[in-house]
Length: 71
Image 1 (cartoon, rainbow, N blue to C red):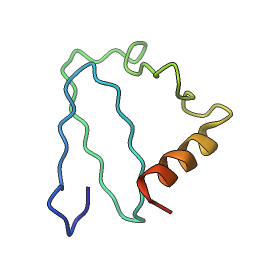
Image 2 (cartoon, rainbow, N blue to C red; image 1 turned 30 degrees about the vertical axis):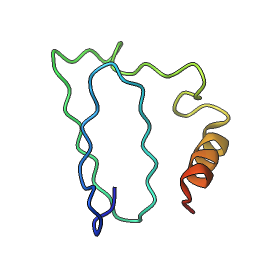
Image 3 (cartoon, rainbow, N blue to C red; image 1 turned 180 degrees about the horizontal axis):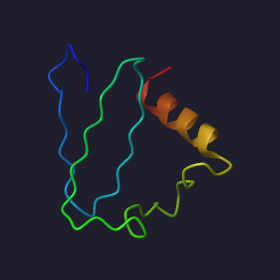
């Protein structure tokens, strides 16, 4: 997505693996999920991706950035 480009919004179908890599110092992420909200089941990490706050997250994000031509 790019504020100057044709893609400014993405809708991800429920149950679809997805990642967000922020490449801009200014970004807004607005997520809407069908309720009711349950914090115990809110996030399900893909088996190939490290969970938030665990070892390997920075390396994983750097690899994603490299693959999409980011910084």
